[in-house]
Image 1 (cartoon, rainbow, N blue to C red):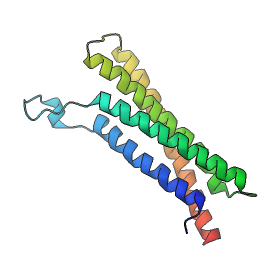
Image 2 (cartoon, one colour):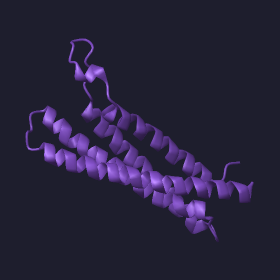
Image 3 (cartoon, rainbow, N blue to C red):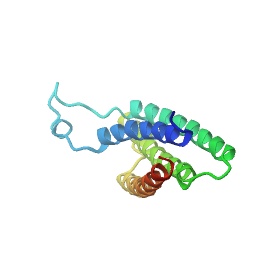
Image 4 (cartoon, helix red, strand yellow):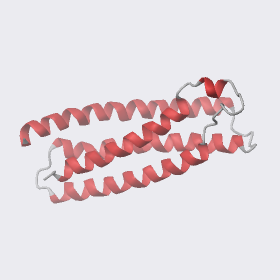
Length: 153
């Protein structure tokens, strides 16, 4: 039987995998996007990504509530379990910032010119900071997981 902390971590990892796929679709270089040849050019679906990112935020809220409940029910929770909410929060911040970028870029594809290059660069820089943060917190979480598995195994 899988303990509740590990089950929550696996669910959060599933959210992370889906988020990374969206991130990669938006930011990965592709000649198909650079050279707009009909039939080959594939535009980024910002609207679809916005909805998928919102769903991921909902999933993270459920994981956070589950983690909080398990922490409350556990007399002396391991540091691994205590680190999960911080990771969820940092990942949620990155997802929220990417969703905001998608909001602006979708509006731009619909003709809204109010989102400037300077605003996009600032939003992207803030997003990259949040990515760095969730990766740092994730590295600590993985370290705590290794310790958790060693002590409970």
